[in-house]
Length: 222
Ligand code: SF4
Image 1 (cartoon, rainbow, N blue to C red):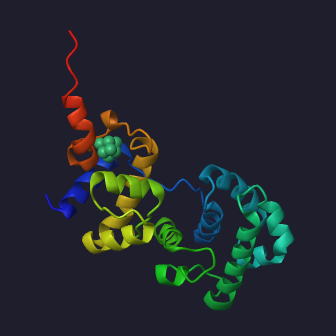
Image 2: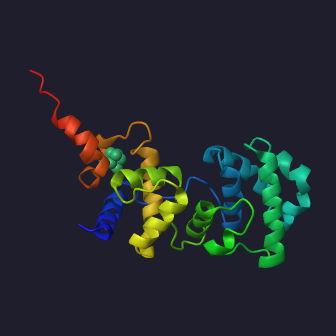
Image 3: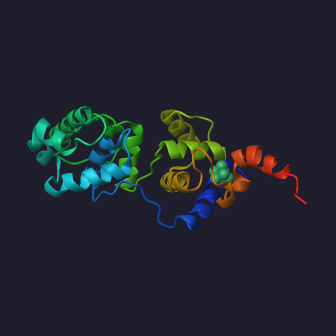
């Protein structure tokens, strides 16, 4: 089985487990997702959902965020980690959206990464999550599960993206991203993967090399 066939099979099996995989961030449009993704760096998606829900009650676009100015926005997102730095990034980002993109969020990774606070992972998240375009969302769950499955040996987000983009056709990227992220949060956990519940054990390098040999050697108790 080559890597593309393996990815097809992983997607096929995981879709049964997660029929409607989504990002954990709860957004209504691409602008909300962009702002939330900037806030979510080094913080939890659950908290960002709470903060964003309040923020977007009164703010519906980049102009409204700019009208809040630093103090107004900082106060609204003050429970977010590094909120001062993130406030500056969001304000700068909104300014550029208005000046260079007619107030709209671009749907292109190479344009998005030019915005303050937007790295390649965030750009892919916006392009995939909001625009449903091919995206490799290399968050820590994706990277861990992709490594265990043997899809890549790279561990740095940009290198993982580059490696997988070479090997896997774009039509699979978004499904694979969302499914592996969901799987990493639910079954292929960081500390102790729940392999006994996983439908991918026969496709998984980690399982074959680490879990199966240990299981096969367990003496049968009398
Ligand atoms: S078999 Fe275990 S390590 Fe492999 S993907 Fe499944 S849960 Fe993760």
